[in-house]
Image 1: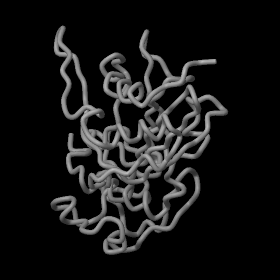
Image 2: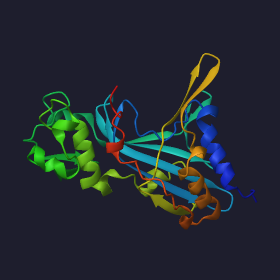
Image 3: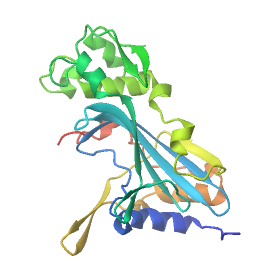
Image 4: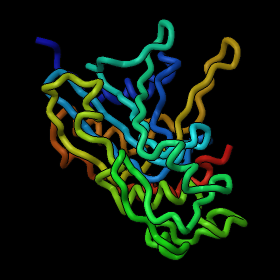
Length: 253
C-alpha cells in the first residue's frame, strides 16, 4: 500500500510544481489572453492519493472562443498531455466556438443585440435583447469596456457563466479525465481567496512572481482538507476574491 500523505506534501507540491515542470501552470485568474468569467476548485483524496482540479471559464481572446480551462494538480495524475519530455497539466473544453461567435458579432468582438441566442456545448440558449439585460451578471457594460456601447465577447462569456452555470461548468467526467477512476471527491470550492503565482526562466535563473500557495491561508487549509478528508478544515478568514471583477488585468494583452 502506498504511504499516506501529509498536508505539507500538498503545499510543497503546489509551491514547486510550476518550477519543476515548465508546462505545469498554476491557477491563473488574470491571464492576459483570457477574460476570466467563473472559477471553481474540486478536491479529491483517499489515504494515499490526492488531487485538486482548478477550472475557469471565460473568453479566450486569441482563440476567439468561450472555453473552460482545467488545471490538474496531485500525486496520482494520469493522461496528461506532453510537451517534449515535459508534461502539461492543462486541458481545454470549448463552450462557444469561433464560428458561433463570429455569427453573433459582425463588428470585432462586439455582439449584435439582434442575436436572440447562442449555442453552448451545442445547446441553444436565449440571450438578452438589450445591453441592460446583461446587467444581471455584468453590471456596467460601458464602464467595463471603455467606449464599447454593445456587449463584447467577454461580456457574453461572463453572462453565460452565471446565467447558464450548469452548461458552463466542467462535467464530472471532464474534471476526472486525468484522475484515477475510483478517487473519491471530497468537496468543491466556489469562493476562495486567491493570489497570483507565476514562474519563468530568465536565462539560467528561475524567476518566481507573486505569492507562493504556502504563504497565505487558502492552500494550507485546503491541504488539511485533503489530508484529513474533512471539508470542515477549510475555514479561511480571508475575503474571497476569485470573482472575475477582482481581476481586471485578465484578457488585457
